Image (tube, one colour):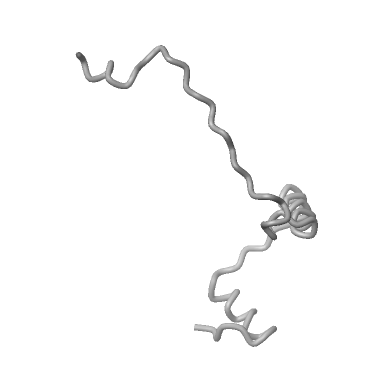
Amino acid sequence: MPANELYTTNEPVPKRKVIRPEKSDDPFYSEENIARLKKSAEQFKRGQTVEKTFDELRKLEAATDGGLPAQ
């Protein structure tokens, strides 16, 4: 049997079930987070983005809330 015939069949590929967490179980799906994600997506579409390096983010975090020290 040729190698290319090993992986080909005429059988249909079974559909996979997508298992999603219950909305109440995962904070990602909270109404507040979904609204924030939608707002961020709209800002991105309008070109309203800000680019920062990790060093810039560390400095900003350290200056604003006592987070990680700047490296």
